[in-house]
Image 1 (spheres, rainbow, N blue to C red):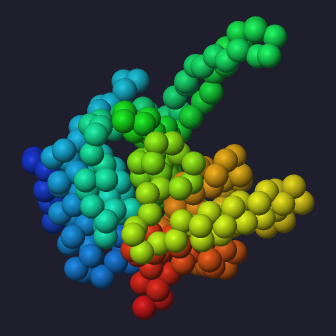
Image 2: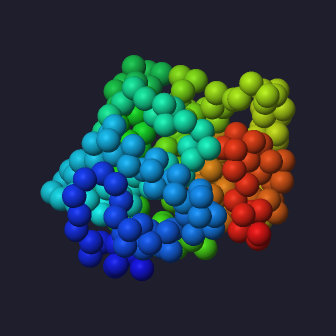
Length: 254
């Protein structure tokens, strides 16, 4: 199905009918939406592309079908929210595969250490979203795996609206901040115990890196494999549903 999409040409920002049909079939979160929601998502992806640039790096040439593919997934978390939540930055940068980020830190003795990390995605506060095209394809093409690097990085973008990716995005007025903190803190602690004991996990172990990564990874799974979050962390599922204003498990079974 993805082959149908990437065989498409096209001009302009509106996703053509045949390409949209391929996207709707290939992407699990999109396939489960009713027709009206799919139409709104298609329009939202076009608005996203009118506002952002999607640029290749490391020799990768970006085609229009690649832009449609990324924009559609970027808009899944905000389908029932607002595109304005992505204001203040303008570029998505896409590498062919993993990219390398160098950093340095000073230890307690004052010695400077340099390190290089290989990443498949990164979000900068008030800056670009950076993606690996290989992993963008891999996650979207395997709905049972629950991973989706695009949704993951855009969940970080929403989280950063409070200033840092700490697992606490700006909540809606009708949401209880103390309840969010209690539920996510308890789930994050329980997830850590699962890692320590080798117990089954509902998602990639990277969720245990920090509360911010826990939110982003569980957001991926919420849209890709909602039944996994429901089974392991039903209170987290309900809060994510209230925040994103979506109920993918109900849509999937309906």
